[in-house]
Length: 554
Image 1 (cartoon, rainbow, N blue to C red):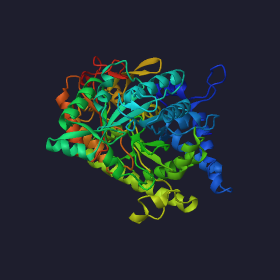
Image 2 (image 1 turned 45 degrees about the vertical axis):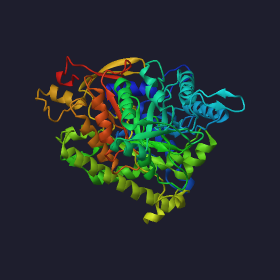
Image 3 (image 1 turned 135 degrees about the horizontal axis):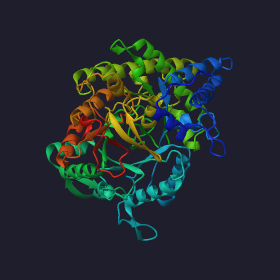
Image 4 (image 1 turned 30 degrees about the vertical axis):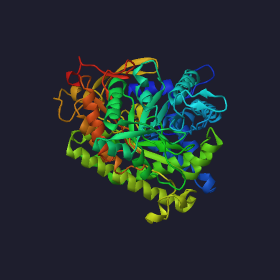
């Protein structure tokens, strides 16, 4: 086992409260170094399946070094469950919801089994008939999709209230559904759907109606009949108003997502995981991992040779996870192995910019974003091809886009995803995902603890008595909403799946501001958009400490 990693106080707190193994009395029985050793050894064992003579110890050492150096970390279920009895290592799942009671309650049961293992679930409720529609043969009336979303929300609360990692959900409804107005408004009641994120799936036709000022048809999900028409702009304004009040709903550009679907011969994508970065077919899962970009900054640039080696290790690691994962359902096992989707992304992007003296809101940042992600995508494709030579293409390869594109070897249907990295970025001690730094001195709520946190690079400037270069130390509030989107789009250009990115608005922002941002996103190469207006929720996890850092005030 390697030496113990160097961790921040918050990283230690996070690991102790959520990740480290405990005995039957609740006493912690492993160190962070032992955790990485446990995970590395367990994941490396998959190599034996393909080569009984492989040096598992050598592979495990490589994996352990990547994690202990905080250069690469897999998603939370992998860190918690690898090498332990639960052994469910994926973070993201999508389940189908059909328009009948048996299917709905079967999906509810399956959701409980997934949440029990630490996974998050996404659903499209668009197939459910609208509220008030006749139910045969009982001659009753349907409660509509919103009523069933409420059912899933209540069940999640009951299932997850004692879990170390409470379950999270994504509820999606097509913009054409007759109950779309009720769906958009539901979370304006702060006591509703506390375990759900919501997204409206907007199609190309809606965007055309929006652009030309036309009415958009609402279509009965069972009969296909047009129920009524509403001005597309009015619907968008309702979405903007809901997002202004609560952060929900976000928008999913569903046709854009399906144009990037790597296996269109297998099925269409209708939903994503809870944070929106992972579009999946029903019963698919995805294992995520993120590379800490701060570990690759060298001489005011990125060491791409070192980055390539780390990407190769990460792709190897994540493909192994698919092999050893103990999936909660047989159908998830089948589909996860059929398409073998992985999602490798980044964290610490904002910190890497600071280290290189680049402002987040700058053309230089956009150039770096594209350069870094294009490199990771290319390195990952090469690594996946090498694995395919030894292990074979993913089973649905011949039903994918790759043969027509001239790609002969591909172990994984998708390779890259930009996840929010909420907890693992705390472990790594860096900024989350591709987000700007929220504030340089913040109060953070974590499980049952509230702690004050000073950004380490900012702290080093203060300790050295150096003036803080405000141009470089930009907060999420000093980056304009348009620039949030530009960074998202830059990463999306070179990402197979999608990008988790919150567009932050100050508390004083208006509904019109958010509506304009939605319209801008519709014209940019992003697969979705999520906004958050400061202090629009009472349960806000992060808040700035303005008395210590006046620039951080919103």
